[in-house]
Image (cartoon, rainbow, N blue to C red; front, side, top):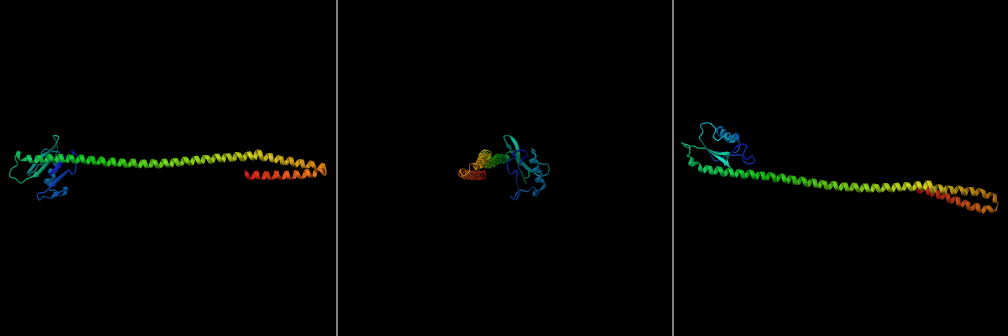
Length: 219
């Protein structure tokens, strides 16, 4: 069993590796015998000693900067426990495993930071595109407002001109037509000499009427 204690190298993967006596790697805890499962639980709990029971385990701690972060444990079939000097190779392997798992954690952390940075970059890109779209829409809205304002000014000017034509020019033309009509009535007292004048005044009256009609159509 090569396993990490809970609370150490949280980002390292895998958390444990178990190899059976036949060389098969077991990844599912449900497949483990009870004695092995208990020993794995002791390692995870950070116990310095193995789980109680008749099984004969050889155990060396995995340390990182003098801190125990897990253990390398083997179930042996020897008559006696190995001597302390015989465990030196296992200690070297355990410490190399600790360094490898620490490197794994750093790699996973860097990978996570990279994914987060990529996600943030994508979000910034999306917001930038959204801002560009909103800016275009704002400019279009401003252009529409300018056009609308120009149309409003034109309409206002049209109405002003129409009022001016109606209130001043048309009234002057109508007044001129009335004056012509009054003058025509006075030519009747002139006898034959006034007929030519009446004819000219009739033409002037017709012209004023035509002018009034054209002004009304323009208005």
